[in-house]
Length: 192
Image (cartoon, rainbow, N blue to C red; front, top):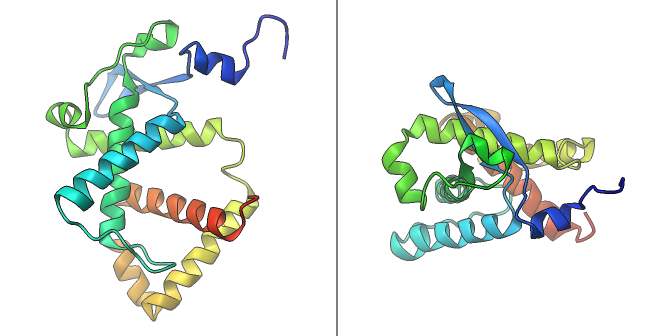
């Protein structure tokens, strides 16, 4: 690190998290910023999603190992929507002071279509992957293949697995797979 550069921790403490400026879905002339989600953002999003789905709506999000349940897919989608709401900022936030675009997930939903929300979630996920050097490692790909093999066994056949997967929104499916691989990695091998 050269003199004058801040460490990632120092940047975080100075509230200077990286911001990715992207085209607003459906309007490439309009730009929007996405803050790199912090661990706090994700924790708050998970807790909010849990409260909204499990406590308030009584959605069952449990899944046996290797399964992607509808409830878990809803939980993952809600978590990422809530995280996006906390990380959505003006495009000029990359230049200095951060200006948030919405107060909470409900405020965001009032002003965005489902497709716009999904498009921005994909951008946020892509940004997170770009900033994390460990995401696209062969071991991560191997774990995803192993998870798909487990899912196929649980489904009983490849056709049943395909039917299940086709019923899930592609961006949600990707987020569920990433979340499942991360959970399996953490529970199977604490050092990974």
